[in-house]
Image: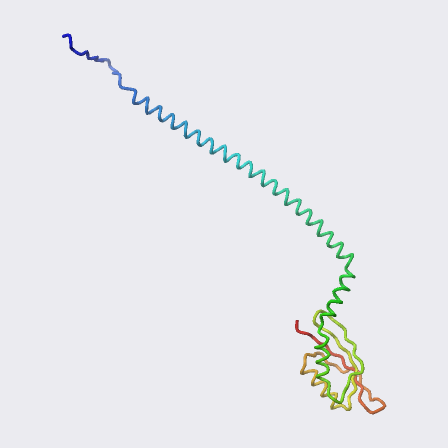
Length: 188
């Protein structure tokens, strides 16, 4: 019996089991759990720092918006103040520009086209009403009433409105002197 192998038998009520496999699995699970905890902790801390940066950025943006709104109000007040201060000059310049941009040639050309050959304009008083409308008062000498009616019909056929004869008289030569007012609206 010299070469016989010894067998170890445990006849206890709770026999020993091979626990190395359980310790290995438990160790791997603990290591995996610690790794996941580390990763989630890093993600949480990163998200928290980004959220903190975002809140700080939002706060800075809100402050910038408030400063911009305040400056906008100040500039609006300055513009209103300068507008009130220079209103007369601006209106004068706008009026000059409006008078320069008004098509006087077209107005006078239309009046000349409407005027019969035997009639002529003695005086002309234009008054600008707004950007595109003008009131014109003029005195015209016509040979007779038929020529005056022809002038009025010609004015109606052109771009003239509200044509009124304000006054009529016969001069020393027997010609009809009429005062006519009308409105002219140009196409913009």
